[in-house]
Length: 134
Image (cartoon, rainbow, N blue to C red; front, top):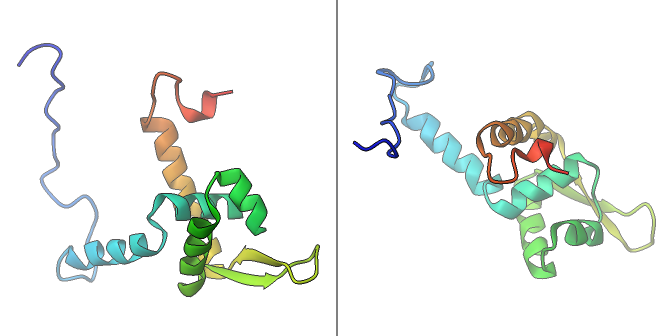
């Protein structure tokens, strides 16, 4: 192996987490897949992150994300269908709506923030970690 090749990764002998009451780790894999099917795509995670910062109006989400209207509408519809976000009457204009997190959506906060911290720690690039960028 030459000096430029990365070291082979050492893998632990046992499972990384206790499987608890599960008879195998497969249930954990299936649960993770179910979660990712709801919030695991690029846009849904970004919508959630902005929702944690109190972005709730369609136009504000669209502008902040740089997403097209049909894609944003589809992602919001999916989050609504799964009970993560709900559509509520707008406070600022008649016949307007806001998209607000439900308790189920708010419960995702520590998970999303853990992913942000992981990225800040491990996803350095030529600009440095995201938290040090201006």
